[in-house]
Image 1 (tube, rainbow, N blue to C red):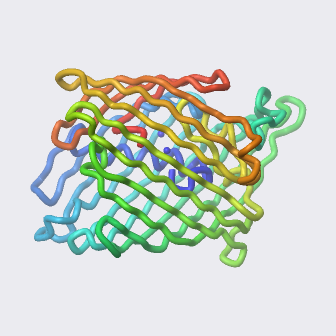
Image 2: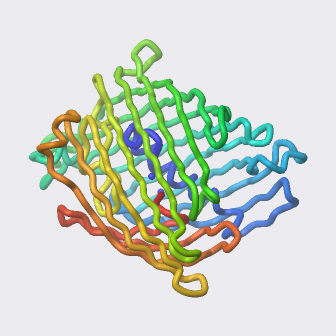
Length: 362
């Protein structure tokens, strides 16, 4: 059902992933293009997620051109999706990406509602809850918006806002202590920067994609918590041969001030349940070798490492988390290089998981 401010809301995480996968619907789903400037499509999306379980989402996508004479801008989209899993998590939402003036301006809007059932493993690597996690759930409404302007070749920058109105339910001692509900609201504003020189957004062979978000959540604008959240990532892509690509990604994130546990950054490497390792600061790096063997069949091998810590200086003494795995790919669209795939990953703490995906992990 992966993340801009990765841990601001697990509701957002699941809606984001669900809507992101609809972006390829015009290439691999049921539907039809009415003409070059308009099309409408629908598709089922299997959910295989070690954090929220397995299930199914159904998504719809409409593509169009705001200006029929503008052939430089990507087609704008409106996407909507609904999904549920076997651990009784569900989410639904809608979003739009708009492109103006020969891709000089970009606007993203997204809103959704969800109920996500998770486990809290505590803060840090050595929490007492690591082996005895507490069940908790988040339900509520999430909305985000940003607008970017091109300020140089491949580089966009602009303002963003985020809003989350949710209830968190903790079931600390089932059957002994009644579950406790906590209502909270996060309201934040900040800036987003984006650099994108990829040859395609689905399975790049060349280029770099980088993104940086800086958000201030403030009580003065209605937030229950005041803190800064910074999240940045960069991913270069290198074509070794036409059928062999090396991709890498680095990410750093930090929260300062009175950030709630739901807003702390966490390790998102494949193999680790989402949110199992979280703290005030985190870094991670991963690499993936993608090899198309024959016809439309390919394989991938990947590995990554990362850490969480209360402060940057604590990384020196902190434990290193690492994971790796393999996957199989099927090229669903030759022209856009859209891949369908299944990955298996195993983590250094013994966790393992399978992932179904449309497109690549990064």
